Image (tube, rainbow, N blue to C red; front, side, top):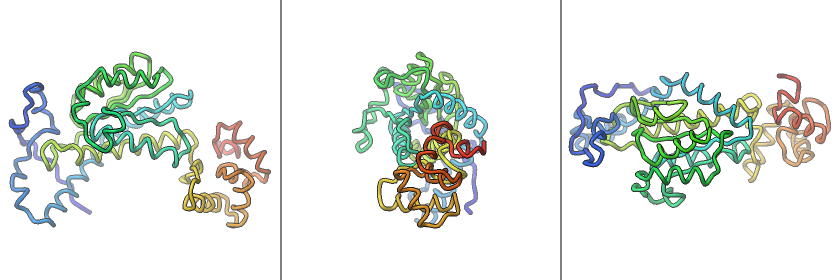
Amino acid sequence: MPSIQPAPKDAEPDMDQRDVNHPDLASLVTERHRTDLADLDLRSTADLVTLMADDQALAVAAVNANGDRIAAAIDAIVERLRRGGRLIYTGAGTAGRMGVLDAAECPPTFNTDRVVGVMAGSAAALERSREAAEDDAAAGAADLAALAVSGDDAVVGIAASGRTPYTIGAVRHAASVGAVTVGISSNPSAELSGVVDHPIELVSGPEVITGSTRLKAGTAQKVVLNIISTVAMVRLGKTFGNLMVDMRATNAKLRDRARRIVVTATGASPESAATALDASGGDVKAAIVSLLAGVDADTAIDLLGAADGDVRAALGQR
């Protein structure tokens, strides 16, 4: 288990990093120069591996420090999703890619298309960096307007600096139409925090490579987005215990997983599980309810419909 060493408190900003157009950048925690790592390029490969592993561990500590804020944000997001709204991530650069990644993984895992990722520079920026796009606040607002964001939606703005114009523009537009807003940043007293309903500041200290927020700031973003989407889907009944019962079985691996999930949830034989899945058209939830309630597939589907897709509620366990 790597030891967790706090970033040096006396690390001073590297003035060479100052942006003449944004002189406040040099004061950001994420832009500070760690003078204790001035010999980084002279260290051994093994030492660098240990150093970076230890530093990454600070990302999880930053997430844990925000547990109550994250929970409050999730509850607000779930309330909007229950209305039929969407969870929309928006950001630029690494932060935008983290949001798009989490959104892309939700359909196969939770059988939902209501988690959306929007990033500065459009889809092209996923493969090839378009850093200048982050400076356009109007584009952030326009991209959210193009999605017809409304008061039924939840919008999560992600920006390590907490001041990215694209992200600020996006969340301001979302707030103006009544959407609930969440801001994820890596700096204290971030500008983003002041314009959202639920500010989450994942302050993990200066990066090993000065200003490279794809490192532990990016790790913290990835962790918290995993938490937000997963816990929200648990609250919405997308799991049965810790089983992925609302998955889309679209390939051989996932069809095998679906059968194993039904076996684990019900204690039925693999053969019975396969039969129940066939009868339900591959619907894992319906197969589970059918086997546990002793009803046919059509009745199981009706029970789930009346319970908003919640397996426990369909079984009378809520």
